[in-house]
Length: 93
Image (cartoon, rainbow, N blue to C red; front, side, top):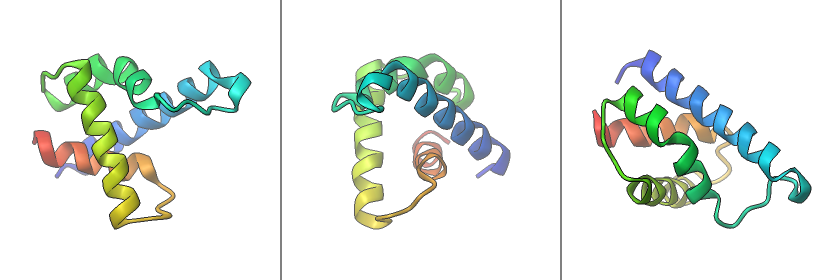
């Protein structure tokens, strides 16, 4: 796995998290449907980085799966963007 690719994807996820928090500033970033919002924001940029094609629904599913896996395998892992980046790269590289 390319460390540079993992860093790029983790940085993109951090950017997405910040944008999401700004979009939901009135609720302090709380959004029960966050995976759908993230998928819409990430789809094109992430597809380009991974050289992959997926629908927004597929990406939503992947984000939910990554979240559940992290909560199960690495609860309390503070650097979720790096965890998700590894998860996504393992599926598309």
